Length: 231
Image 1 (cartoon, one colour):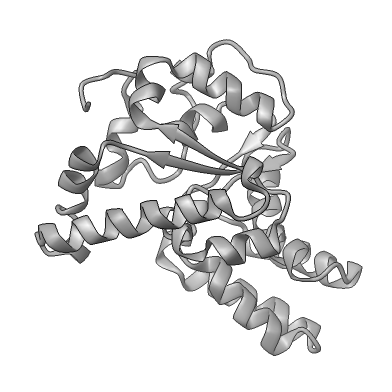
Image 2 (tube, rainbow, N blue to C red; image 1 turned 90 degrees about the vertical axis):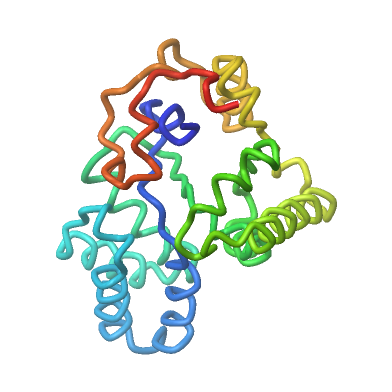
């Protein structure tokens, strides 16, 4: 829901989830950065074969061209990885100059995210644990194990708290789901201010953007207007 609201802003592009693309990409870069064409082809192959990336609908030739351009500029891994986001924005949101990644899995890689993108604003969306755990437990990976789901929620919350307390805490912000659905304009306006862009009326109820992955069962509810029914 928060992704839908932010992505509605003309300056922001937030593609579908990337799962552990950042980790795979870094391993690939470290192994092949001295062999540029192999690096580009290997990275394009990673993007093509990850199931989550099918929802990005990237043009492979356009992606390779962007990757080659990043390699030629010799700006290191951050620019190389960001090429994937730049490609998506060029295809679907040319007006955007801020790129986001709405991937819950990244909570386990916060140190890496902050190392690669030290200026990034990390938005941690938290929901009442009873609601969050009752949702988590239905995932295939949880196998209806409430203890497993509870431990996952608790560990994720702990990692957020640690990230907020170690240096650059001002670039880590918490948004409560309950606040988001009760006062969406206030929440999104504050986030736009932190991102250095102006808030625009209508963002919270904009339903016209193709988010790419709303066909997936867990995301279908995002097509509805903002409501408090799930509190």
